[in-house]
Each structure stands twice: as structure tokens, then as C-alpha cells.
Length: 65
Image (cartoon, rainbow, N blue to C red; front, side, top):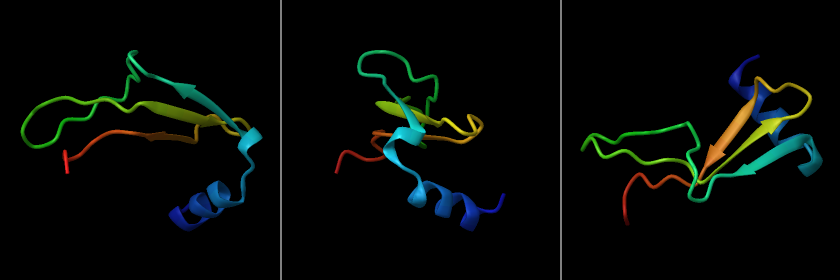
């Protein structure tokens, strides 16, 4: 699946197609470290129910501003 197909799938999906998991205060297991080496985690993630190999994550801060 190419990027265009993936983006189309996401845009055309319904809310019920996604299993959303809040990670407030819990690890998302998707850590990210900017160049300064300080680790940060996403606050939520979602799995696409028809194909759980497709997922989204959001809520991480790349910069304070």
C-alpha cells in the first residue's frame, strides 16, 4: 500500500473503524526523542480495526512553542 492509498483509507474511514487508546499517564510504547535527547511519548494511539497493522499516534510535542 502506498502513501496515497493509506491517506485515502484514513480520510474515508469512519470513527468506528478505529480502536482508540488513551495513554494519559501511561506509556504509549511509542517513545520519540528529539535531537536534544529528551524522550517524550504520544498521548493517544489508534489501531485500524479492519487491518491492525495500520495505526496512528498523536499528541507528542516536538517543540514547546
